[in-house]
Image (cartoon, rainbow, N blue to C red; front, side, top):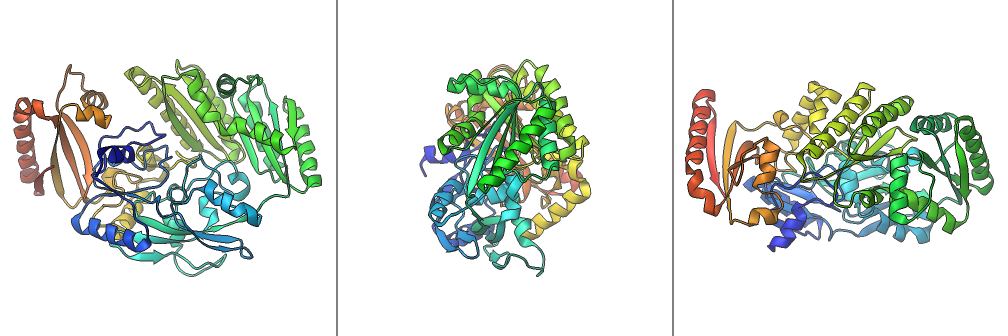
Length: 536
């Protein structure tokens, strides 16, 4: 397998979570039967397996920390059936939502979820994503009728019929939606569709504070108006858009709306919201009905995150999201903005304000450890503040590797234990995307500790994108020069330690290897467990 291909599949496109390893093999199945054979073989040999869609995930879902097999679903992107009268479509998981909507447009239909460009239907199911239209149409869990899933033992399961409602048995569809590839590989999805709106209006207005803007979003929802989008941008985000696109927008907190329906209805909605805006210190209320003008206005929001890098082109972005009950959104954003404004880092705010979902983009220099620590602190502040308001650590990005540490506080150990039991029942060897979603201490590890010696040529570590210096920083080691690094391993039903070193350094580290072996023997003697050594 070509190294570059493996490297690309092991390195996330949009995530600040770094790759500590890359997959050993990347496979491209073309059918459900091929997926089943691959998964069954991985389970037999206890090889970790990571499903791979559009790789647009924020929280490191497609990382391969244990190597193993990356199963790229890009060859499975067919539209298998379109039922126009029933307003549903059956697709393979590799098709992108934008590609699907191009197919549906001539039929007057569309799929109403709009996450980032490049996202595939399979990945959207796995992360339980949503987007700006969720305030009107719901999230992925509301728009999937049924799934076909390959379980860890290779069995192919259909989760439900195509009926719009059913009271038959457990809701396996919603169990898999949001499971992040930890329970099985999605091979087919039946989606609800919507009619393309007859008419739409896009509006934009400005406010003196983010609290005023959030209050208007809440007031709009309470008015009963069925808006299709309510998006909030703070003044820093608007400044980024001005810099990136050469615009001259007022650099103040901004709300954007979309109204859909008949021409008369959307104009009536627009005027009601204009009045609400005026009552909450809003100004510069503008709206567009012409298709080109609407596209230009909405382009401001669609390119918001990428515009952030125009302010700090040499920085990385820590992008995070939380969600709270709508009544707490204004307070959450206000408290978070105070903390963000006091930070030396550049931070922007974007919110799906109609359903309480709030994002921040924190720009930091990856070469300055204090910057990374500050970004982590701000992210943690936002999460804990949301949790204190009966909110969630992630509204739509998913858990992945980045949000696992918050799950116990959000859900409680009893819920995590239940999740662990479900995982153990469906994936007893823990091969399905290990190290994601469920915190490692909740996994049944089969009482075995493995130490992996992974030897690589000097220079290959740098090519992998995660060498000694980064591991030392992660582990809090302040030694100068190359040193031994201990890499956490969670694979094949076992928690272990990977020892990463380059070939010229091996003699200097032999003593440390023997020390680790002694620790293993102590572990075996003290706990009565089986210790093992695996050499890669």
